[in-house]
Length: 440
Image (cartoon, rainbow, N blue to C red; front, side, top):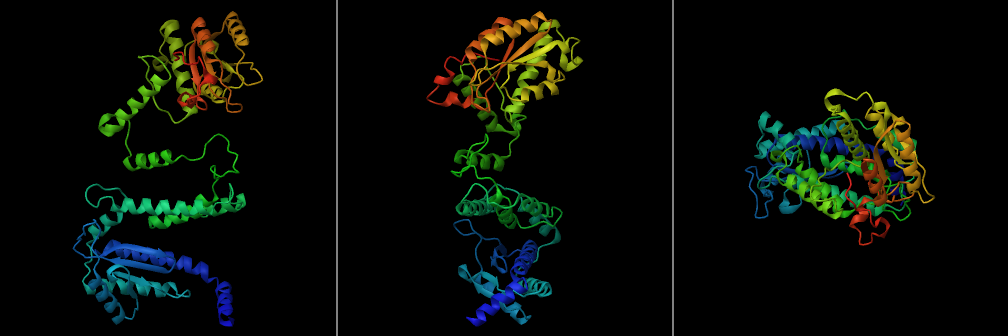
């Protein structure tokens, strides 16, 4: 008991835990560099100073499961060669093919350098082949990409499994929506991350990110979390994001996204059908409500110039009457309507807001009166923005009536449904009944 307590006292006094963490990462980095230079190390594994390397046949053979074939005989030869040079390492693991490093907490960086030099020399003497400089360079970069063919995605599977396990451990420790770490402390910790450091082992980066970023994030899935607008993460979304990132298709053209091109059009056609927009309807996916509002109002702006006097804003810029153009929306519409007007060169003054009911929906009588008044002032109302789900109230405007008013005055009808549009997929649509008239 006394000796144990004394040991703990020394560990705390000399800050050996932190030293072990730093020294362990230094050792891991060195072992990974050796892995890149020789052809018989399949993996560096372990945590802290408790690290090991798996020795496999230098010929690159694989077993029936597609795994590199372990080489216990070579491992034993490496262990003996290391011992002859003054380095004692342990042999164990699957088929006795793992060399384990079990250094003391007080090991110095000079001693780690000696261990790294010795084990690399032992590997080469024992029969592990040193790669050429070109092979080593190619190997060090190759592991960062997903490859095709047999064994091409082994590294991918290992990284994904490791990341899944790291996040699983984070989720299992969550007991409240936020860790409680002081914001200034969190900011300091993140700012102290050295982005200019040398290439690090990816699994170590995943572990560090999980500990620093994930553990101190806001957990919207926690029962006590009152979120803003974003929902708890959905399993299908996480799986889909992983597949999308792993394929990295570009939607510019078919030759960059063969299957995804058809997936995009299939889903768009399906959505147009669900919203009953008509056979000629089409669309495009955007990053969210901000981009959608901007794109919709850009089309409306260009259309009014074209139908008024055939003016092409794309080629000639804004028309002479641009200062008279008006966008009409409710006073509960999202602020990106004003932001879009500013980006489109019309200015926020171009947005006319109509009064709403207590429930947040637009007053249609006031809308009719306001549009009439705008026209009487010589202004040009050209777009009407309806809202299917305001961010404050979740209010859905009477879209059917708004569609009729748009037709009556020849306005482009744009619906901001970023928040409530998905109700169309619900079996209950009473709140948006009659709102599925074709809209632009």
